[in-house]
Image 1 (cartoon, rainbow, N blue to C red):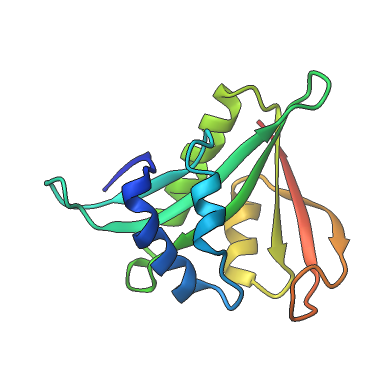
Image 2: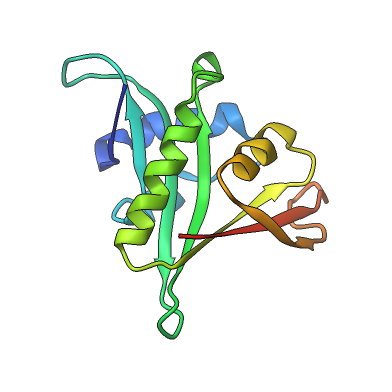
Length: 149
């Protein structure tokens, strides 16, 4: 497996994974608008130019008076590739890219009931800072998690 920056040619595969992973998937235009974000990365396998995408992460940086904030906006792995550490690798590499882009902290939102994701984020140093009531369209709360980079 390799991790590389996402390109426009990857967006349809990313969208497929997004739709199979989330009840409220992002639209194509959201990914298209972030294709140049510093931590929009894809995990691929295989050895030729048509390597299938196993998962992706989207992260960007917001200036904040000398303490720039990285934001992990989206992370998903193909259902048939889960449990192999791909999400962890994508997250770690995204955090490195955010740090190299000037972020000193990183944040993300996670569904309160998503135990698998919360476990991954906790293991990677993220700590909850607050609950965001009714953050998701179905009314579920989100937890805002933060880590120092």
